[in-house]
Length: 432
Ligand code: CMX
Image (cartoon, rainbow, N blue to C red; front, top):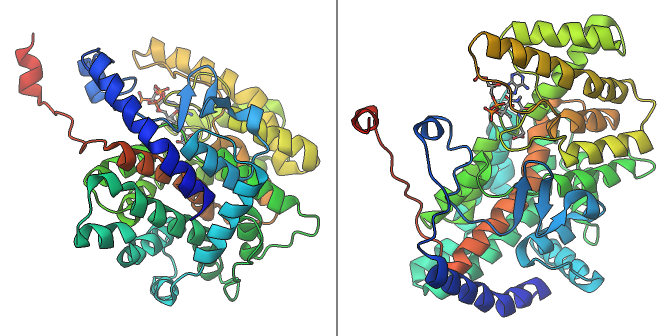
């Protein structure tokens, strides 16, 4: 048994006791109201689900199990997953143990490669990645145990096994998608003993003489791991999982949500916008040029990708962390310099544009600051990962940790089938 599994066996009874106590003592306490505007507005701010892995505070950003992200920015993804799931920092032995657990499960079934090679050449990498996860559904331990009959108390155990199987294989699958989709040559196999982030970097097959790219991948995979429970991907994974669909179904579904341009796909759009700006002005643009192009984009009815957020009201600490990495490792890179300069200009442009919107009777823009997607692409680009349409796959590998940790937690405490009540306009009018 892995030390993570043993840890879960000891703490899950406490989670269950806590849940029972909170329901008994506070079951009738009101968490939230929901106005008509919120019902039409994507339920922003409505508190209607429970998530223990992480919290997003509008003025602080991501807090993982009580730790603000930038206080723990040097964690490796193995440590991140352990922390997300247990609320505790793993010691070196537990980290090594999880690495060994991944080694045991890293082999990807051949039929996955057959499916990926058979997909149309112009398939989106996210479609390939999500398909690869879904096609492995027949491997699900949860489904096998469920079909044989198991008690609810055991639900978390095969969910944990599925989670480890999926996480162990994702770097290989994601790197394989890259190599197949962009004709980069043969699949590069997983290296036992190498960590999750460095293994992924290695299997992509890019040159990394000083290990900077592997270092970036660890950071990248750590930073994108989770963003509490209500975002599109986590919420979708949770809803699908609440029907006891197994983790292969649930994670693939969640990632289909991540593939949308208002969510994870923004990182592809974002670097696209940066490169467009550089092409237009023949290099690193001046602040005035960025201002003009930003207004041009907004006036054409488009969003400035990488800016704004549904919850955050400050600069995303994940952007700050990537920006620090850029200053430390690739300060002379023109794409990074452009991203850095855009950061000094675009918030003011969005503020001014928001005022114009309000004067025209439209909603204000709630947040002018960069989100995670504004900065990550420039770093990837520097290390030779130039295919923007691939970027959301990297995000997906990481976000699977959060979705799976949430799924295990929900199975462990027995969270119910998701079924909010919907209403129609006649009902709303009847309330007047
Ligand atoms: N550029 C232009 N307009 C923007 C904007 C931006 N960066 N951010 C918000 N707005 C607009 C919205 O489109 C909305 O307009 P309408 O009322 O005409 O539809 C208005 O401002 C109000 O939106 P909001 O309350 O500030 O933000 P939302 O919660 O509705 O949307 C988000 C949040 C992220 C979808 C939005 O800020 C956006 O589209 N940003 C650009 C895309 C992006 O970076 N997405 C990545 C988010 C992080 C992630 O999930 O990966």
